Length: 142
Image 1: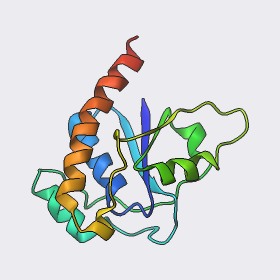
Image 2: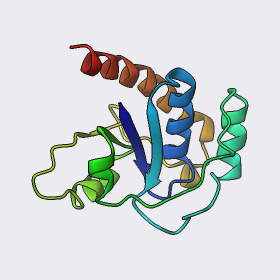
Image 3: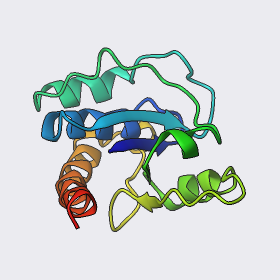
């Protein structure tokens, strides 16, 4: 199962989700990306790295990249951090592609780059990741 997490800049929420899931399910093929390209090549935002590190999650090796329409063919599941990112992803969907795009959580994951609540975002991501893992298990073994 190949899963990609997508937020706006790929320096806070989506790398955090990738890191959380790597800890929960090291057998999955995981990646993260941003709908915007401002931070391509950058490491995750230092405050997010520090908040994640306190939870035993190392984001230091990740680098931001921009989501492209090619990702629809490369991944089995695309996870958006909020409704706006989901809409931006869907606008890139190639004709005829059926790769599922869903939200990470029942609510938008607030962007801690703006809210400064890195722990709050990680809390939402951690709960949602556990549910996502259960859903993925059902998808693998129907």
